[in-house]
Length: 347
Image (cartoon, rainbow, N blue to C red):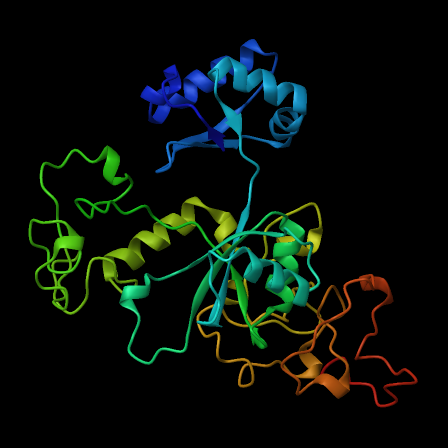
């Protein structure tokens, strides 16, 4: 993420022109071959850059190269370190996302580094909560991919409650002015605003009928343009998933092979003879289904964070020991001193 580019030449460019200019700068600095996959201006005036391959990413991550690149882009340009977004479902409302002490307490309870959680925010605006609501979904920005993956695999303890955690996936961009796709309100060319609640020509925050529901996108009543159940939105999500194969992965991909596995929703039914796939995490669409969807012992294979000892099969708060390599983890299909009755491999 490039910050401080306002006023520079690249701040006036968008789309292919922005990507071409940044690639020209990198080529002048000595980076050869394929360089940038995408360069997307952000709402905060920053520029999000995705490198084309590992060689380009390694080159830009070197301190000297990064400083030279920032100077070439603009005098006040700096690179903001990347964070990884995860979502904690059904988090108690006692949490204050803006309170630094709350973030530190979550890190301490879950045995994370003190500043592992960079920021937190609620997934849905507070004013749209239901009367008597006790929990809500909390989005956390984490500084390290390994910490994020550990939270996805094991969950987090927040306010003495064990919560299910999932990865934030890329979704289509919706304009908050015209309710159209693939651009932000600051770039919108529409002359009038469209309300996401009632479809009339005014800003959503000024809607005189906030309880009316009509959709600009699919031209139907019963839901707002912001609804995640809108057929048009679901179609756009499918298109976005096809353009971003990383959305199908359960974890944030790193150099560890176990992070390359697909999400359980994307997997086909499998047997014990299939290649290892993690099965500890719950289905993304039903965070409350921990008990009814728990896999039996015969369906678990040895590997990172997949083995659960027999005495813990009915415990929802069990956390595996990540310090044990996969090769040394017990296999429930083999007889051991602690498991004298092995589970048949074809069970």
